[in-house]
Image (cartoon, rainbow, N blue to C red; front, side, top):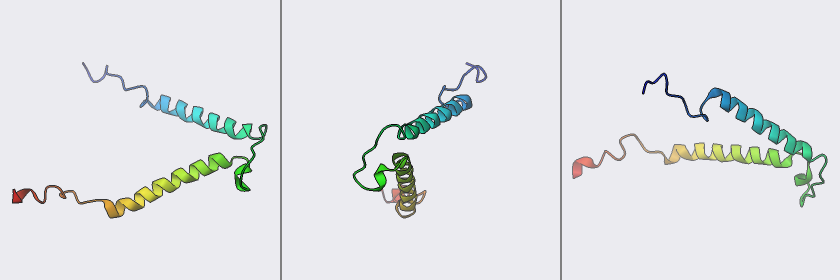
Length: 89
């Protein structure tokens, strides 16, 4: 099979990625806009605010990524970490 005739998977095509971004953005905007029409009873003061779920989810995801990056500095090993003890065998 020639590489020119081989097609990429539909999820890695730039047009599909662009469509997915648009689709997910529209769904998020509709979800936040729906809070203007549906009463959301919050248990605390801030969780009743409009768009709180979207903002909280985004900030939580951002915090998880930053904590993972921070932990990576302390938990990573060198490239030859597993190869260093091979000469003892």
